[in-house]
Amino acid sequence: MDNETAAGHLTRKTVLRAALAAGMAAPAVLMGVPALARTLTDAEAAPALTPECDDGDDPTPEQTEGPYFKPNSPLRSSLLEAGTTGVRLTVSGYVFGLACRPIPGVLLDFWQADVNGAYDNTGFRFRGHQFTDATGAFELTTIVPGLYPGRTRHLHVKLQAPGRPVLTTQLYFPGEPRNNTDTIFDPRLLMTVRDAGTAKEAAFDFVLNVPQDPGPTPTPTPTPTGVPGGTWAAGTAYRAGDAVTYGGRGYACLQAHTAQAGWEPPNVPALWRAG
Ligand SMILES: [Fe+2]
Image (cartoon, rainbow, N blue to C red; front, side, top):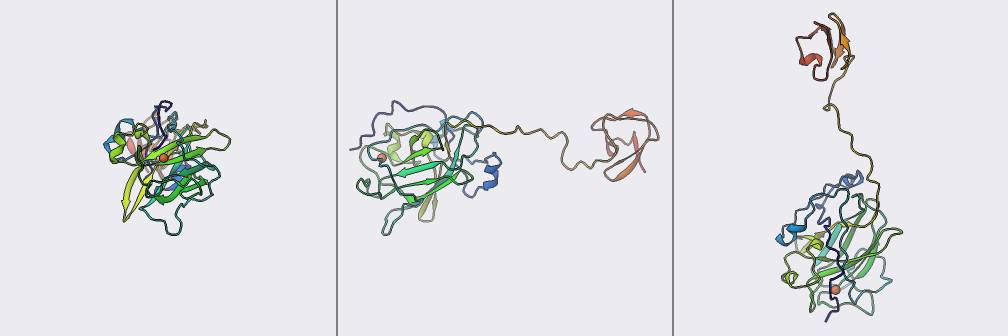
């Protein structure tokens, strides 16, 4: 019987939920504009969804460590060993800070039950730690953990950004019958999971309580792209007969006026004649 009881200390904040579309381009993350696909199909996840990773997003909820954590797990992103049985599972995602910027070098220490629901408490089977890469990404290769009494299906993980406190939490699988009865289960910690042949591909993004500079505010583009330009300039007082260029063409002013955006020569034939 598991001692992972009492979720009383759990935070109930909204969390950035699921997950990156598989194959999402890393450059989007580097630009600080993660184009996350939060397409959880399971209705149980719907209420707490955060539609976007934006400034002020709440951190991933904490969960109980349970009785089976062991320090000093091996450095490895694959928990598969010779003879490992079970449905292959990859879990991938990113670790973000509070401003939704990815964090490189975050320690993730995973541990889980084997296909029969048993933890290895003497060795380190199904235990391993890794670090997020330069884009804040991680990927775990493992198996779908087995069930054991008292709990729904889950993975355990501890995360620690450099110089920051440890977050201990768990990850869950959509559509598990025991999700409805496990008092520790938190739908904000559901992964997105999809079938990939005989294997499963899961995704989850973490948000750590790490203050971040949100970065430069995007500057609104004052004019559409592809403005051709020229000597014509808004704000200029033109007189009849003045010559300008715009878009590679020359124009002659037909009547005196002070130019305004939107009055570019091609747009106002009453003011400008192409020459
Ligand atoms: Fe557990």
